Image 1 (cartoon, rainbow, N blue to C red):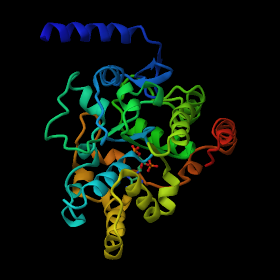
Image 2: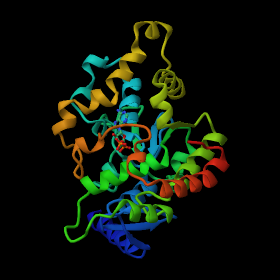
Image 3: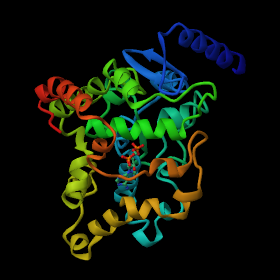
Length: 322
Ligand code: A3P
């Protein structure tokens, strides 16, 4: 079986080398697969995920474009689902990165093992996984099952600026390449050439699914969570099938979870400041300033106008406003 799997690996590598390529913002390779651009480490994992993943009805998928607040929503979903086992003062989140508690199914799991065992006590039901994989490339098993999908998106200008900081400061930089300027980044962004881009198509795939199947896909905006965490947490808990009881609301359980998962609390934990739970990034890389509208400090108004226009055309026309 070792031979078969290394044969399969070779075929996958060969397939990946035939995909269109571009350079990302720091000079490493992006591969275009099924219409979207993937960082060099992703295609093999995504293909294995597509080919082998078997969904459970109780699975919960958190799906995002990178830098949309994935870390935050990982913490929130974990806390909602496990609140009877771990009250906030004993939460594993106090000592463990949300990325360890809710792994990326493709980038963390299938990247290490093409046929992982996901049917054991390491992954108790409901299994909670995250992914950045676009709607059109999800394994059919997910589309056919009744599992829940929570999609989180963010104002594209803020997503872009957050991504720019993340890549320039935390990506494995090729020493011979000058990191890209914001203006050059915008050019690539317009062409959809950035990790898991094009942005609008990624968002629209899940936006449409949420309109067609609201019982399966809950669509959130980062800005809405920022504005009103309590009522959105209740909405999230209802959607996941873990509604807060009257008694819990009286006891302040909703506020307790919001507090525990807030930017300030998570960022200042020892595990966030010094830990490294992922082979690629330090935990601290996932906490910058967590603000709405920070793009204004980095993008000049002319460029911002062009971007806003694009988003208006593509997203606004589909009913999505930021
Ligand atoms: P900024 O770079 O704008 O600060 P992701 O988790 O998808 O990688 O997204 C990271 C972005 O979410 C970063 O945005 C980060 O600071 C912000 N973030 C991380 N944890 C957060 C939290 N608990 N509440 C709000 N924003 C958070």
